[in-house]
Amino acid sequence: MIGRSRIFRPEDTAFIFYLTAVSIWVTLFHRGIERWWIYVLSHSLAAVLTIAWVRYSSASERPAVRFLRYWYIPLCLAIFYEQIDKFILGLHGRYLDHIIFNFEKSLLGVHPSVWLERFASPVMTEVMKIGYHSYYWIGPILGVCLYLREDKIPFRRTLFSIMLAFFISYFGFILFPVIGPRYVLSDLYNGPLNGYFVTALQDWIMEHGDIYGGCMPSSHVAVALVVLMLAWTYQRRLAWIFTPLVTILSISTVYNRYHYVSDVFAGIIVGLVAFFIGKRIYRDSPEGLSVEIGKEKTERTQEF
Image (cartoon, rainbow, N blue to C red; front, side, top):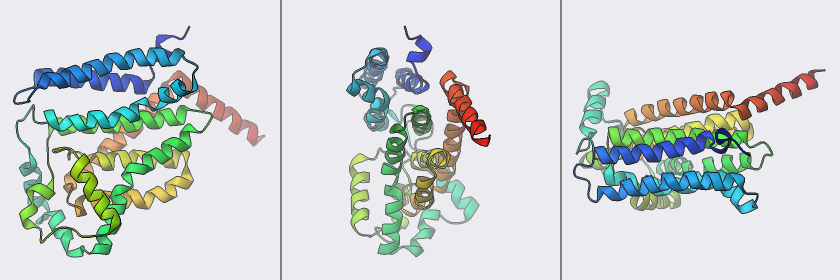
C-alpha cells in the first residue's frame, strides 16, 4: 500500500494549497466581486477533485492515467489563471499603478516604457515580440524533454518550481493589482508598436487571453527565469538557446508596454525564490535524496 506521503507529491500539495487559499481569500475579501461564491465553489470543488484524482491516479497502471498524473496541473493552470481578474480587486478595490509609475518616474526621471519608444521600429518590435512569445513554449519544451527521461524527478522538480512561480505571482496580483503602462500611460505614447507576423499573433493573445491587473510581479519573467535555470541544471543544450530568448523577454516586457521595470525586478525575485525552494524541497524529499545518492555512486564509479 502506498503511504499518504508518497501519494501526494510536493506539486500536488502546492496545487491543493493554492486552490484552498484562494477559496478562503475570496470568502474573506469579496467586496464588490459579482457572484463571488462561484469562485469559492470552483476552487473548493477543484481542491476536492484534485485529492480524489491523486489518490485514484497513484494506484492506476493505465498509461493514459499515468501520463495525466504528471501533466494534469499544467493543463489546469490556464483555467484558474483566467479567473483571477474576476476577484483581483477584492482587497483594495482599485488598481495601484500610480504607486509604481510615480516611484519609477521619481527614481529614473522618465517612464521607462516611454523612453524605450525612441528605439522602436517594426524589426525591433518583431524581435521583442518573439522574445516575449517564447514564454509560451520554452517551458513545455523543457518539460517534454525531462518527461521523456526514465528518471522523473527532474521533471517533477521543474513542474513544482514553475507552479510555485505562478502561484506566488497570482497572490502578488491580488495583493498589488496593477494593469500596466500600456493602459495607464497610453496618452504618452506616439502610437502603437508595429511589427510583423509574431507581433500580430502576440497582440491577439494579449487581447483575448491576458488578465486585467496581473502585472506585479511579472509572471512571464518569473517563470521564464525558473525555466532557464532548470535548463542549465538539466538540459544545457536547451539552456544555450533559452538564454538569449529569456534576456530579450525580460527587456521586451517593458518595451512592449506590458510591465513596469519594477514588475520585472519583482519577477526576478519570485523566479529565484521558486527555483531555490524547488531545489530544497526535492533535495530533502526521499525520492530526491535517492536520486542524489544514485548520482554520487555513479560519479564515484566513473572516477575509478
